[in-house]
Length: 296
Image 1 (tube, helix red, strand yellow):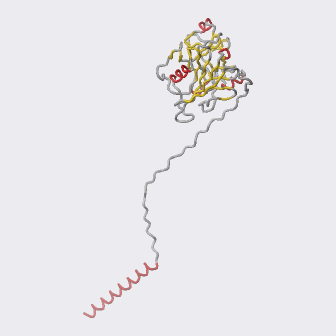
Image 2: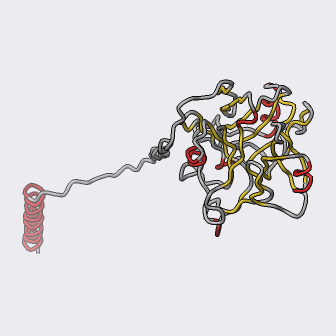
């Protein structure tokens, strides 16, 4: 019995020894894959950089005037929220209101108006509608009188800006019959009146917010003041535009006794001495408009 027990112990020991040898060989000669430990870490994404917007490229004016009449001067004024381009014309008789030659079809840019009439300067004018809202400016609205000729009329009184034959600027609500009785030879529809008899008519900033503006005024000596401003952050965050109150104050600072607001926004445009003075905010560049005020 003892011999059998001793033999069993010997066999067990031999089995363990053989098993240990096999395991040692496996760990020694069979390469184990490395243990990869992944450590996750939250990393903020870099800010997205948007490409700068393209600046529109405007074509040069077709016809450049040879001589600028005396008494015409351009100022550039810089304010906190806008830049203003102020053109003063000492002789109001040099100014005419003109309508698109493609009436009912398409408007013209201020550059085209100036080129058509061989003028020395021009700004956009009054109200118009677009054919199918396509931004063409071919249909003028309200009363329009150009060099004494009635281009467009209306039955009811309208907010009118115009000049008499003597060169006096008027702004207010009139019928066509009243304008004729006053010998008004240049007229278009827009507003509101900013200055009347030397007194500002706008309360505070006004109700129209901040935007590119176009306006016209006149001093007591007859000098006409044409103003166009930038806006809509075209040149940066400090270029949001001007309020009606801003334009009223600027007109008063230039001595205006009468002043009125013209069509603004993407229509706001000034051309002087063959140059596009401001940078219009319309995505396509200069907007086609129905009427303009030109300086011959």
